Image 1 (cartoon, rainbow, N blue to C red):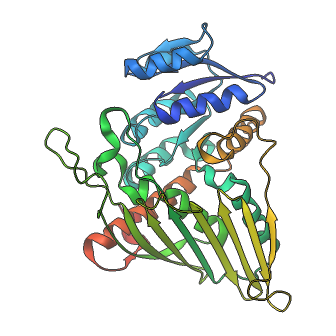
Image 2: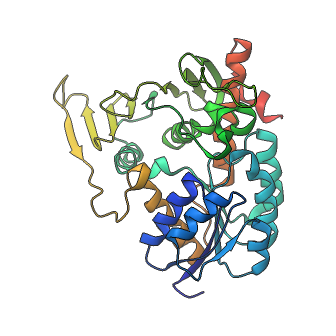
Amino acid sequence: MSETVRYGVIGTGLMGIEHIHNLQALSGAEIVAVADPDQNSLNHAKSIVDPQTGLFQNHRDLLERGECDALVIATPNMTHTEILLEVIETGLPALVEKPLCTTVSDCKKVIEKAGNQSKIWVGLEYRYMPAIAELIRQVKEGKTGPISMVAIREHRFPFLKKVGDWNRFNDNTGGTLVEKCCHFFDLMRLISGSNPIRVFASGDQDVNHLDESYDGRVPDILDNAYVIVDFESGTRAMLDLCMFAEASHNQEEISVVGPLGKIEALVPESLVRTGIRGEHSLGNVDTKITSHSEIPYQGHHYGSSYIEHERFFKSVLENSPPESSLEDGLWSVAMGAAAHQSIEEGRAIKIEEVMRN
């Protein structure tokens, strides 16, 4: 393969357009085809891609054309399984938007179909946000020692409006703790270097979308939750999610604590604070500003999607395994599913319960 990778983008809604902008900023990436059944979405894509780009309303027509070296799948969550099963048949590498699928059972179907030679990269790009990447680097260097606690807070704006309002209902999204929080469960696993064994959660829909109705249905997506996760390693992790807290200084705050010290990452301030016991004290820690000025397209996720695309591009050229694998996608969905089950049943859920699905 040459140093040019020809991409097909399946799904040209909000995130599909975001992926197109990232690819347009990436040297060597060429968008040769886009597909979306919604004409307005397809027209939007048409307005920003090269006039020679193939336009399709059916992703199968795009696949059958056979012009692509790699794919980006950015369709609604509930469509991922069917599309992925068809894409795997082609043997093409693909980056699929999170979550991998909306259920554990569908994730397993995709993994079984892909086998041991999977070329599917799951879009869990928060791990590439500069401040979070620096936190992970310091953790892996052993700055904290063995990890005792991981705390992640996301206080943010409500879900945006999407085509056909598909993201207002759990049966389409997998539920907020799958749809949105798979990012944070992925980070917990990545930081701890361990798999979860038990999940306990409390959450509800208190504020957002309660005055909305679609064909007589009122949205049922959670807008706040606390989730506690126990890991095989002994690490404990906590997620604090609020989706009516856009009046916040930072949107994401992550802290990792071990016997040697504590590391914090703050986004979008892009700060990393490191405190080592015996060297630092309350209010006196090292602070590092992680620059992302060299990233040519910042986009919605502070440059992390561009970095993800750089790495996916490299993996396509080298035919190397995805950094964010189908297994990573499965675990992040399973943890979210366990959290939802915990809220519904009012008890801690052993991860093996949801993994049996």
